[in-house]
Length: 338
Image (tube, rainbow, N blue to C red; front, side, top):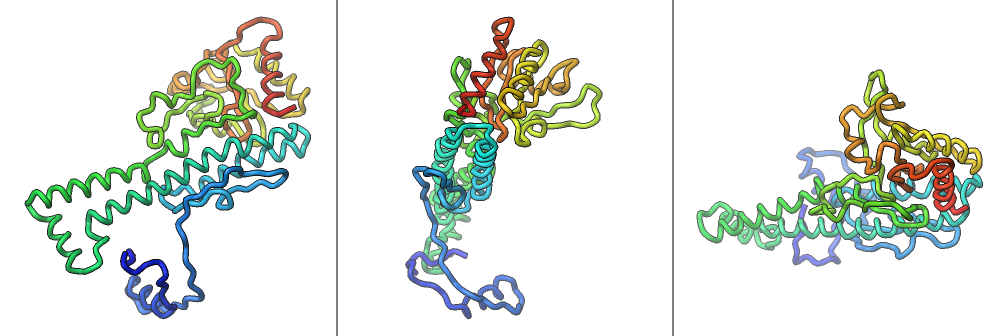
């Protein structure tokens, strides 16, 4: 239902009018009772900070926008996913209170981007509405637009082209993965010192639409299908990570990382799962997707947080002896604010 543009914003129907309209839309004389009527206002607002002291805001309490793009529930869940492990680690003594400061730093930019994208998507629907004449008040005016859409005239062609362009622009709403998958966290809970490469977004033509998987610190762990050496079924990198613990991905030649993770897990009181990928390792890379995406050498390491975002990565083992242990200790203590 599209309201009459000339009606203004103060008009609100009666319960009887809404009950009648529901029956008309459904096409049956249903037993409908409207209990109450209220207005829903479209918002384009995001809080400047999501936390203050021991108070943490998430979901619609800190970012409000229309339902276009379907970003509402997803963003709320992402907020909780980011915050939950940090609160748990601090309460359990596994991390310092400073870890909680990273929540707002990481999620505010995401909230800002989401409310812009959702409202841009809503605004693009206006172009479709105008192209088909829904913005016209009188029935006769709408009928004239409908005839023009069918006409073999320059005006008709122009209107059809305008409508086509408007529909094609909606791909950002229905097919845009970038707005959700290309998030980059930049905070004290991400370690980039000495890390080579970049987040992979500079080369992306449309970061809001196209998803560019990357293991650069601050990016979401890419999904890659893995198998056991004796294949029985596929398992995602996401399924071997998370679950309240850190995960360290490495491969052939990365034994030192496994030893370091085991020792540091005991020293710091945290659980670090080591996942090895490659021939003769715990998991195989059946489609070579991990080899293409991992962004490090086989003996390199990718440290993933409990929320499945990359905390840090090392291209390879640079020195012998205890270099891997010293480096990983420095990274973990920084991320955990210890």
